[in-house]
Image (cartoon, rainbow, N blue to C red; front, side, top):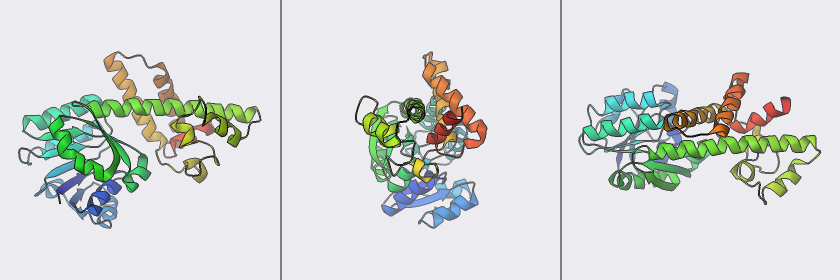
Length: 292
């Protein structure tokens, strides 16, 4: 049993913490939202009223927060009071520069650290089937891996500090671009009189196949588990996709990489969000193309 402080109990963090409890670990959680704390308590997480209360006797700290600035602020507070050798795991999706700064902060006080963002959405968080993309030292990765395996199915050590975040934003840039291409193809197919099933049967088994078709098809019918069959209730919201695409473009700008399709995808999802669709699944962008 490991004593874990889990900071950030939202739609992803809450079920991740619950899976740690199911595996027999003692989890003390903290979140600014009283409702999130109550929901986590119902799964066996012990609620802390303040951040420092969650850290008492903790052996590992896991953070799952919205932005890089939040991670740096919370880690600054955490590192004031935790002992040397403590392991800190950040599973937020944030910019690479902030992730690297967090590693430096942890190293300055002798703590182990790992940036370990996830892929798999809320369904994967609940089922414990997330993919973790980890960046940090081999020692930090080895210490964190048994806990990550409780919350995820695929655990990949991507390299040194910040490599997990780099892998995450590259992967999600591919996802955003490919979903737009799939949506455009299905709208074109509709205009040409193709049934959704016919196009799926061809594209999912030939050169057009990709995750956005085979697993997450943006039209109802061909893939029963896709959000298209549930009025696009999000597994992964358009707002989160936009966040990741913008992170990819920040990274492209700072590194000098040319990503014209990534830039266009960010523009299109930005428009989709402005039209009031941020809380819908990102695959619902097909409706914007139908209306264009």
